[in-house]
Length: 340
Ligand SMILES: C[S@@+](CC[C@H](N)C(=O)[O-])C[C@H]1O[C@@H](n2cnc3c(N)ncnc32)[C@H](O)[C@@H]1O
Image 1 (cartoon, rainbow, N blue to C red):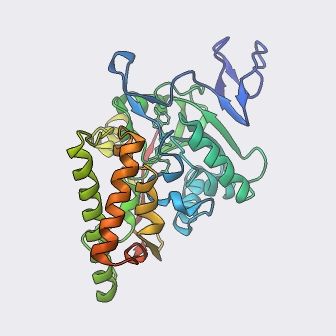
Image 2 (cartoon, rainbow, N blue to C red):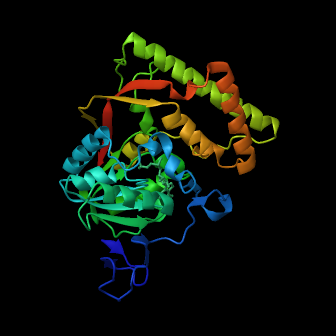
Image 3 (cartoon, protein in one colour):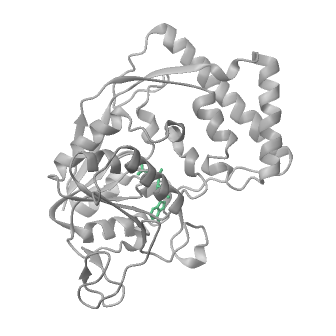
């Protein structure tokens, strides 16, 4: 299944049966690339941003620790079906939001990510959810050079990954190479958090089902979040520090459809209410410098700006402003599927 870097033949971990090469591993993570977790240096080939420094503040659910979200369990069940319970490569697996539920539904998951921090979060999540031994194989790898043999896996999941790499076409070619004929590539969206109801958006093409009271609370939540963010950057901009965006805009669905010659949309029936406070999510993440755009902000300036906006907001909106709650629905779960 894996490609031996010493003899170039297909191999199983931990030792190549052809040449005896031992695949290095550290703390249970196979080290299948020598590439750094973040490469924004154009001179060194395609650029990408691994989540090494975003780590525990990882997009919208860093605060949810090791618990599997019901929506992710539903998604994992459908992914396992689409892979026929076989071997899934979850490339850019992050903290295992989908790798863990898919393994719990019976697949063997090669969990690949360029970031060790994210892979260690995945390990904790797998352990906390009692994933059977050997069902998840954590591998540090670069999606630009997937260390697997041709036609070696039944399915590939690339969830919220392709926009983080400046040459997604190359990653799609790599994914196609490792899929067996008839195997499937599955994509979620570039911003998985969008499926959580925002009264100003619709999810999966359907209007939101929040009631008016919830809508008002949500509107206030989003307003405070936006104001907080603006004020934070205003202070930093005055100090000469600007947000740095590391992401590349492109249409991932069109690119995969062009490469595979087909595309199916799979809707996953699911609906549940979700809820969190400003403190739970936005403030926790922003306070920890957990947004990609904060990565170039020096720690001391960040601490000062964040503390100042917290104080200003406490004065303007009252000491309890951080307990303002967002209430929404998780629904409109969807996968885009491409068959090799
Ligand atoms: C937005 S997170 C998505 C995580 C997970 N797939 C999910 O949907 O919950 C993107 C992940 O891709 C990883 N990543 C970014 N560039 C990568 C690359 N070149 N090779 C492998 N992983 C990469 C990051 O480290 C991060 O963990």
